[in-house]
Length: 263
Image (tube, rainbow, N blue to C red):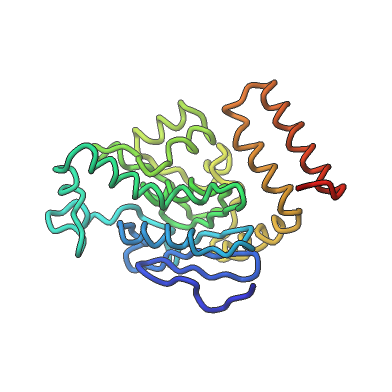
């Protein structure tokens, strides 16, 4: 499948599909791609709209910043047009508040699907929700001007958009705690050194580098990529012997498939 027209273009999110690669773009550069519930719903819709042939998804943001985080309008009494503010949600029942946050989190979960490899191409500010959206992807290519920061704790909140699990997995508990509680900036060189970034490139080479990586990822057979991703995702929660068994089972499936004996 080849498409030059957007599959989706709404509420600050655009999805374009070209053969086996999809590109999801945050399209609110005037507000540094600030995030809102409407944008999160559009991200969920983008994930649902992906054709089955898509193997790699690139996530990018228009303008000088990837995403500067939550749109602060959500914390005003007026909130966003047509929906409750975050302050209104706080006045609801525990069940209602939990359901609302769970719905927001859905925008950050589908990037980890085992049938996809996802790449965040990150430039400029990636703050709070922006940092967590970059962490939702499997891989991160960053521009030399990138500035990651987790500012929620300093505002009296916590990172709640699924970012804590991958952050600890990438940099370890102690460093993740320090990054979150201090709210400091993590810039490109440190991001690469501590494992947040797979690659650092000049800002004008970011899109090309993401395209090159996407092309390289498409070189391996899809079923082998899916099995490998599942093995690696499960490695931290399995013991050594469990992981050995998972490797054997995955390899058996691959060998049978290559021999024409698969289901």
